Image 1 (cartoon, rainbow, N blue to C red):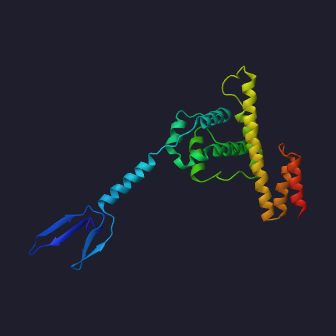
Image 2 (cartoon, one colour):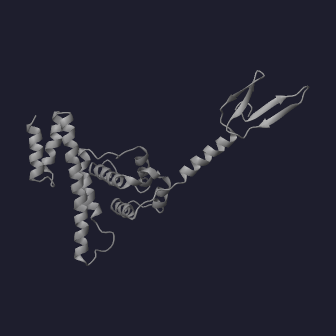
Image 3 (cartoon, rainbow, N blue to C red):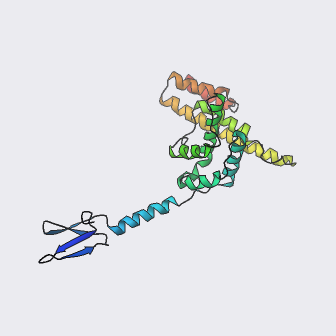
Length: 237
């Protein structure tokens, strides 16, 4: 305690001494009979910092109803069974990922679809919760997927998110609205890819970047205007 500045000893005449425990932000350290000010970590600061870290750890992420529905469909499609997966995710995921969690979940599903198609083995029910947590912690998916995941992102929308958890509703109008929303999300993904690969090719006009841009010509959401834009950019160089 003396070494870390928590305890001050003042030697009296003879063999007795006065001991003082410091509780303030600034303590005094005695060295070679010279007293000088030195800012040290006190007991108070140590406890305060520990409480702040504990408080930050206890902040739970709020998983929205839409994200819960997405997770439920993923569990049904991949056969993931975990009793308290929502509670564990809300406890372990950082608060900062609330804004981009939905996009991350789509990429996670696309990643597992790709591994399933390549017969490399996708996540199991015993792992998928830890997998999501590690995915977020490692920063995966904070940018949009590369060209190899693009196809599987579309399959997530068409093969998984369009599927009904409950029995189909009789109202045809409701089903049409759901389909339009899903198509819009897939179309927005295509627009992001288009902008991304145009900028990538303009920054580096390599054969690989050009090939990635040309691949978008065969995309189902690539209309005539998009094709003309891609062709003009390629022909300029």
